[in-house]
Image (cartoon, one colour):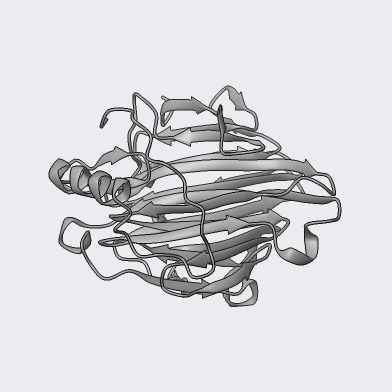
Length: 293
């Protein structure tokens, strides 16, 4: 019997002047372990007059993970951080009780043609840490654990697995793993996983049982310890998951919390612009009006 309980297709979402493929949350699966939101951003070809410009916007109750394949983003936040993220590095921003940040094309690229392609991920915080002080961590590409086994390349972007630990400072048991192969191979990594697990196909394909799955799909496993599949040649997949939280987490816009009253307070604070400011920024993204899910 197949170990796949759910298949999620990318759904287009607009985050400004280009589209992203939204993968989580999904109506049938709101989270995988502590992962509550995944966007596949791009690949976007931006001309010399097109730039990524996401003005200051707030977050609470989560950590954001930005991981680029191509391009560059200038991150600025209300802690005073100003840092360019490049392919292979990890920006890990923990919002806790509240942080505000902007994401823009760096100044030196704003008048040239460019590419932007990557993943943007939200990881919910444990209930007892949802109101922690915000912080920011940046981990360079060379510091991410990477290794090869049977001709397959592995990278542990965040969390713990395979007896290894990423330097990204996570707050609950989780893993985010990149697997690349130039040749068709059988992958059996269930013994190294735990909790809930999902698999995102970036390029190439995988085969599970008699079924072949193509890019822009997330596969959610029934049992992470039985994670086994065949990866086709020239494929890249991402495995993500970990221990789910005992309580439900709610999402409103950029806010995540196990307490709806905290979400309501965050809405009020953003409407009244009492969140901390991003130095050097004057714009902001207005609060939308959809209901709490």
